[in-house]
Length: 345
Ligand SMILES: NC(=O)c1ccc[n+]([C@@H]2O[C@H](COP(=O)([O-])OP(=O)(O)OC[C@H]3O[C@@H](n4cnc5c(N)ncnc54)[C@H](O)[C@@H]3O)[C@@H](O)[C@H]2O)c1
Image (cartoon, rainbow, N blue to C red; front, top):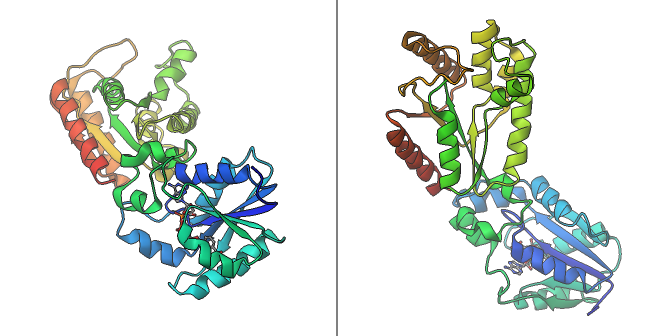
């Protein structure tokens, strides 16, 4: 049912727009000719609000991007960020309303929220507008920004819009030298945590070229690193809370050094830019498996290579959790580290 012409739906949306917000926005969008979603921000205040919670402050730019993505197929819905200082005084809302009116630039005749408690204040701020309350009891999506900030997003994963989820996915990367059980562990962890994984891209890369792992060229390694990053981005969009990743740019650099004796600055740069939530380092103490593509099987060589990889990881100050022992012990240790990390979020 149409209730007005120009509608406004505002909030902090901190840490992020959740499904309750999306529900209210979509319902509001059907009741007016044009709807303006306003992200009210005061980043100094927000940082204090987030300081005691589980989620670090998320910049207004990111929240604005999420709203833009959420409404991209809704040409009559417009998104704005408006500064509104939060001192706890009613004058904040008054000045905020001035900013909102200036951003929208035309008379607002409908103001949406899910709070009956806002009716009096909206009467003062928008005397020409009616206040429409949507789902005050939050029946459709029983969630709030405070719950997300204090209890974390993992507990309320189903309350996050799909486009928001990748931001919060925790990335677990598994590193180690050849034949130390990385790909098996990565697949097992992904299945156990009911999510997906990124395979070691170097293997796929050389399979595509006709299995020429022993005839590598310098340019292969940056390409492998780029394609690997692209796979991470693709899989991140589909991940269920966690994404397990086999290998990253430091391991690719290590292979470049081993196979062609070259340390490549571009791989160092990728290594500096990448960000993972948990690093699992696999010791090479399981039996060497020669699958036809592996080259450094003697134990002495394995140990020397292991020391080289460790040294590279140390250079980048990577806080690795070491995983060792037989396959069962490895899996148990890895699960413990993953659970510890999830508990903190
Ligand atoms: N100055 C103004 O005119 C004006 C108007 C509106 C909002 N604001 C700003 O926004 C802030 C208010 O936003 P907030 O922090 O109360 O809310 P918020 O950012 O968490 O939510 C925004 C809106 O969504 C509604 N909502 C929240 N959870 C919901 C759920 N599960 N289902 C359905 N609807 C849900 C809220 O009631 C609110 O109307 C104020 O502090 C102010 O800064 C200012």
